Amino acid sequence: MFRANGESHRAKVIFCGIEVDDRLQDLAQEEGAELIAVSHPAELARYGSEADWGCLVAGDGILDADALEAVAGFAKQWPGFSWITWSSKLDWSAAIGAMQTGALNVLRCPDDDAALPASLASAIQLARERFVAWRNRSDVSRRYARLSESERQVLAHVIKGRTNREAALQLDLSLRTVESRRQNILRVMQTENAITLAALLAQHGMLDQIVTTTDSIGLTPHSASA
Image (cartoon, rainbow, N blue to C red; front, side, top):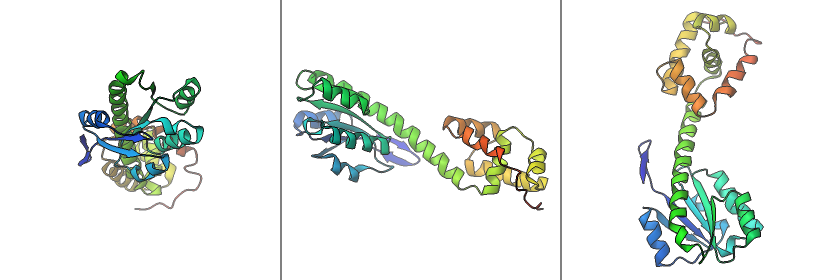
Protein backbone atom coordinates (compact mmCIF):
# COMPACT_ATOMS: atom_id res chain seq x y z
CA MET A 1 0.00 0.00 0.00
CA PHE A 2 1.16 3.56 -0.69
CA ARG A 3 -0.24 7.06 -0.83
CA ALA A 4 -0.45 9.25 -3.93
CA ASN A 5 -2.31 12.52 -4.40
CA GLY A 6 -3.68 12.17 -0.88
CA GLU A 7 -5.19 8.75 -1.59
CA SER A 8 -4.32 5.33 -0.23
CA HIS A 9 -3.68 2.69 -2.86
CA ARG A 10 -3.67 -1.02 -2.02
CA ALA A 11 -2.68 -3.58 -4.61
CA LYS A 12 -5.17 -6.13 -5.87
CA VAL A 13 -4.11 -9.68 -6.70
CA ILE A 14 -6.72 -11.14 -9.03
CA PHE A 15 -6.68 -14.90 -9.55
CA CYS A 16 -8.56 -15.55 -12.76
CA GLY A 17 -9.66 -19.12 -13.46
CA ILE A 18 -7.88 -20.42 -10.35
CA GLU A 19 -9.29 -22.03 -7.23
CA VAL A 20 -7.87 -20.01 -4.36
CA ASP A 21 -6.52 -22.03 -1.43
CA ASP A 22 -4.85 -21.05 1.85
CA ARG A 23 -1.44 -20.79 0.22
CA LEU A 24 -2.61 -18.24 -2.32
CA GLN A 25 -4.38 -16.28 0.38
CA ASP A 26 -1.14 -16.20 2.37
CA LEU A 27 0.79 -14.99 -0.70
CA ALA A 28 -1.58 -12.08 -1.21
CA GLN A 29 -1.42 -11.23 2.47
CA GLU A 30 2.38 -11.25 2.42
CA GLU A 31 2.26 -8.67 -0.38
CA GLY A 32 -0.23 -6.56 1.55
CA ALA A 33 -2.67 -7.01 -1.31
CA GLU A 34 -6.41 -7.52 -1.55
CA LEU A 35 -7.15 -10.97 -2.95
CA ILE A 36 -9.87 -11.29 -5.58
CA ALA A 37 -10.97 -14.47 -7.34
CA VAL A 38 -12.86 -14.44 -10.64
CA SER A 39 -13.75 -17.37 -12.84
CA HIS A 40 -13.79 -15.59 -16.20
CA PRO A 41 -12.10 -12.50 -17.72
CA ALA A 42 -15.52 -10.92 -18.25
CA GLU A 43 -15.67 -10.39 -14.50
CA LEU A 44 -12.54 -8.22 -14.55
CA ALA A 45 -14.46 -5.16 -15.73
CA ARG A 46 -15.67 -4.37 -12.23
CA TYR A 47 -12.08 -3.89 -11.02
CA GLY A 48 -10.92 -1.43 -13.65
CA SER A 49 -10.66 2.18 -12.51
CA GLU A 50 -8.05 4.84 -11.93
CA ALA A 51 -7.82 3.74 -8.29
CA ASP A 52 -7.25 0.03 -9.03
CA TRP A 53 -3.87 -1.57 -9.65
CA GLY A 54 -2.10 -4.86 -9.02
CA CYS A 55 -1.48 -8.22 -10.64
CA LEU A 56 -3.58 -10.71 -12.58
CA VAL A 57 -2.72 -14.39 -12.27
CA ALA A 58 -4.26 -16.39 -15.13
CA GLY A 59 -4.92 -20.08 -14.53
CA ASP A 60 -6.03 -23.21 -16.39
CA GLY A 61 -9.26 -21.73 -17.68
CA ILE A 62 -7.64 -18.67 -19.23
CA LEU A 63 -5.25 -20.21 -21.72
CA ASP A 64 -7.34 -20.20 -24.88
CA ALA A 65 -6.74 -17.37 -27.32
CA ASP A 66 -9.95 -15.44 -26.60
CA ALA A 67 -9.44 -15.53 -22.83
CA LEU A 68 -5.81 -14.47 -23.12
CA GLU A 69 -6.81 -11.56 -25.34
CA ALA A 70 -9.41 -10.52 -22.76
CA VAL A 71 -6.87 -10.57 -19.95
CA ALA A 72 -4.31 -8.70 -22.07
CA GLY A 73 -6.97 -6.18 -23.08
CA PHE A 74 -7.79 -5.45 -19.46
CA ALA A 75 -4.11 -4.88 -18.67
CA LYS A 76 -3.76 -2.55 -21.66
CA GLN A 77 -6.83 -0.57 -20.64
CA TRP A 78 -5.59 -0.23 -17.08
CA PRO A 79 -1.77 0.11 -17.12
CA GLY A 80 -1.71 -0.30 -13.34
CA PHE A 81 -2.11 -4.05 -13.82
CA SER A 82 0.57 -6.50 -14.89
CA TRP A 83 -0.15 -10.20 -15.30
CA ILE A 84 1.37 -13.65 -15.21
CA THR A 85 0.14 -17.15 -16.00
CA TRP A 86 0.27 -20.06 -13.55
CA SER A 87 -1.28 -23.20 -14.93
CA SER A 88 -0.92 -26.98 -15.00
CA LYS A 89 -2.04 -26.90 -18.64
CA LEU A 90 0.70 -24.54 -19.75
CA ASP A 91 2.40 -25.96 -22.83
CA TRP A 92 4.86 -24.34 -25.23
CA SER A 93 2.16 -22.94 -27.49
CA ALA A 94 0.18 -21.46 -24.59
CA ALA A 95 3.32 -19.99 -23.04
CA ILE A 96 4.30 -18.29 -26.29
CA GLY A 97 0.76 -16.99 -26.72
CA ALA A 98 0.75 -15.54 -23.21
CA MET A 99 4.10 -13.81 -23.65
CA GLN A 100 3.09 -12.43 -27.03
CA THR A 101 -0.01 -10.87 -25.50
CA GLY A 102 1.91 -9.20 -22.68
CA ALA A 103 2.34 -11.65 -19.80
CA LEU A 104 5.22 -10.70 -17.51
CA ASN A 105 5.97 -14.34 -16.72
CA VAL A 106 4.65 -17.84 -17.43
CA LEU A 107 4.76 -20.55 -14.77
CA ARG A 108 3.66 -24.18 -14.89
CA CYS A 109 2.25 -25.65 -11.71
CA PRO A 110 3.33 -27.66 -9.87
CA ASP A 111 6.76 -27.59 -11.56
CA ASP A 112 7.27 -23.85 -11.00
CA ASP A 113 5.29 -23.44 -7.79
CA ALA A 114 8.39 -22.39 -5.86
CA ALA A 115 8.87 -19.50 -8.27
CA LEU A 116 5.34 -18.15 -7.83
CA PRO A 117 5.99 -15.88 -4.80
CA ALA A 118 8.94 -14.11 -6.45
CA SER A 119 7.09 -13.80 -9.75
CA LEU A 120 4.05 -12.36 -8.01
CA ALA A 121 6.18 -9.88 -6.06
CA SER A 122 7.92 -8.74 -9.27
CA ALA A 123 4.59 -8.33 -11.04
CA ILE A 124 3.19 -6.25 -8.19
CA GLN A 125 6.30 -4.05 -8.11
CA LEU A 126 6.08 -3.48 -11.87
CA ALA A 127 2.37 -2.73 -11.56
CA ARG A 128 3.04 -0.14 -8.88
CA GLU A 129 5.66 1.60 -11.03
CA ARG A 130 3.30 1.61 -14.02
CA PHE A 131 0.42 2.79 -11.87
CA VAL A 132 2.33 5.73 -10.40
CA ALA A 133 3.63 6.78 -13.82
CA TRP A 134 0.16 6.47 -15.35
CA ARG A 135 -1.54 8.42 -12.57
CA ASN A 136 1.08 11.16 -12.73
CA ARG A 137 0.75 11.46 -16.51
CA SER A 138 -3.05 11.52 -16.22
CA ASP A 139 -2.77 14.30 -13.64
CA VAL A 140 -0.52 16.37 -15.91
CA SER A 141 -2.85 15.76 -18.86
CA ARG A 142 -5.84 16.94 -16.82
CA ARG A 143 -3.99 20.10 -15.85
CA TYR A 144 -3.05 20.74 -19.48
CA ALA A 145 -6.70 20.26 -20.50
CA ARG A 146 -7.68 23.11 -18.18
CA LEU A 147 -5.67 25.59 -20.24
CA SER A 148 -7.52 27.70 -22.77
CA GLU A 149 -6.65 27.42 -26.45
CA SER A 150 -4.87 30.77 -26.29
CA GLU A 151 -2.87 29.64 -23.23
CA ARG A 152 -1.84 26.48 -25.07
CA GLN A 153 -0.57 28.60 -27.94
CA VAL A 154 1.45 30.72 -25.53
CA LEU A 155 2.74 27.54 -23.90
CA ALA A 156 3.93 26.21 -27.25
CA HIS A 157 5.99 29.35 -27.79
CA VAL A 158 7.34 29.23 -24.25
CA ILE A 159 8.47 25.63 -24.75
CA LYS A 160 10.20 26.68 -27.99
CA GLY A 161 12.26 29.11 -25.92
CA ARG A 162 10.71 32.27 -27.28
CA THR A 163 10.50 35.38 -25.12
CA ASN A 164 7.18 36.89 -24.09
CA ARG A 165 7.73 39.68 -26.62
CA GLU A 166 8.42 37.21 -29.44
CA ALA A 167 5.32 35.19 -28.53
CA ALA A 168 3.23 38.36 -28.43
CA LEU A 169 4.35 39.31 -31.95
CA GLN A 170 3.71 35.82 -33.30
CA LEU A 171 0.25 35.59 -31.72
CA ASP A 172 -0.74 39.22 -32.30
CA LEU A 173 -1.34 39.72 -28.59
CA SER A 174 -0.22 42.44 -26.24
CA LEU A 175 2.88 41.79 -24.15
CA ARG A 176 0.81 42.15 -20.98
CA THR A 177 -1.64 39.50 -22.18
CA VAL A 178 1.13 37.03 -22.92
CA GLU A 179 2.75 37.69 -19.54
CA SER A 180 -0.58 37.12 -17.78
CA ARG A 181 -1.28 33.91 -19.64
CA ARG A 182 2.22 32.66 -19.04
CA GLN A 183 1.82 33.13 -15.29
CA ASN A 184 -1.53 31.33 -15.35
CA ILE A 185 0.03 28.44 -17.29
CA LEU A 186 2.68 27.99 -14.61
CA ARG A 187 0.01 28.15 -11.89
CA VAL A 188 -2.26 25.57 -13.54
CA MET A 189 0.61 23.24 -14.41
CA GLN A 190 2.02 23.67 -10.88
CA THR A 191 5.54 24.50 -12.00
CA GLU A 192 7.88 27.33 -11.02
CA ASN A 193 9.29 28.29 -14.40
CA ALA A 194 9.55 27.33 -18.07
CA ILE A 195 12.45 24.96 -17.44
CA THR A 196 10.63 22.85 -14.85
CA LEU A 197 7.50 22.94 -17.00
CA ALA A 198 9.39 21.64 -20.04
CA ALA A 199 10.97 18.91 -17.91
CA LEU A 200 7.54 17.88 -16.60
CA LEU A 201 6.04 17.67 -20.08
CA ALA A 202 9.07 15.77 -21.41
CA GLN A 203 8.89 13.30 -18.52
CA HIS A 204 5.35 12.38 -19.49
CA GLY A 205 5.87 12.28 -23.24
CA MET A 206 3.88 15.44 -23.99
CA LEU A 207 6.63 17.81 -25.05
CA ASP A 208 6.86 16.96 -28.76
CA GLN A 209 3.09 17.14 -29.20
CA ILE A 210 2.96 20.62 -27.71
CA VAL A 211 6.01 21.91 -29.59
CA THR A 212 4.60 20.85 -32.96
CA THR A 213 1.54 23.01 -32.41
CA THR A 214 3.69 26.05 -33.18
CA ASP A 215 3.71 24.99 -36.84
CA SER A 216 0.13 26.19 -37.23
CA ILE A 217 0.22 29.05 -34.73
CA GLY A 218 0.13 32.47 -36.28
CA LEU A 219 -1.76 31.41 -39.42
CA THR A 220 -4.91 32.94 -37.94
CA PRO A 221 -3.84 35.96 -35.88
CA HIS A 222 -5.84 36.95 -32.83
CA SER A 223 -7.01 40.45 -32.22
CA ALA A 224 -4.65 42.24 -29.91
CA SER A 225 -6.00 42.58 -26.40
CA ALA A 226 -4.92 44.69 -23.48
